[in-house]
Length: 114
Length: 112
Image 1: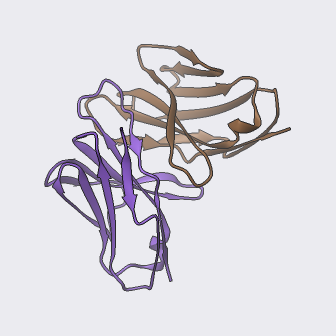
Image 2 (image 1 turned 30 degrees about the vertical axis):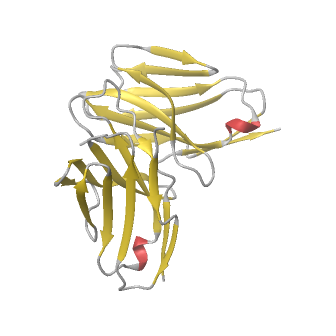
């Protein structure tokens, strides 16, 4: 079953606290992504990972870092969360070299930073 | 990178009519253009896509047109139903690159 799973789905944190968002996929996809979605801005790429320990910044990496120690698992970390990081975060995966660019998205993680 | 502009941001249509969403891109190297539908509280899901070797693609009430010269592509939903109400995102991808660049989305409401 092709699935991208995100945990937690909902999270409330105070400003300055650390946040860990986790993502797993069961398709052995090499490439994984973290996007954030804000009204009127669509989906903005935070980080992309090409495989284990092979990560690159996306368009808005500031304030975030990632970790990929296993192909099926990709984490997004916010060290000292800020209120403007309140958003819905989507993880996605894609098979390397696929003839299409289809991304498989997780269900999203809604983060509120107070 | 790539910049994808999507219009309109809000679209309201009557049930049974057609709905059209337009996107433009900047990078002539982009060769793959998917459309995603996102229902409230859910994740985006691919509904149709088109590659640069095609000008038109149709599936199940959806039509995608691609004008490479104008760097423009569009989604047309024929005979809209209330179930078509959702956010729609266009995207563009360059050959040999792993990044999908998304438009800002269109909120489609189909009114009975």
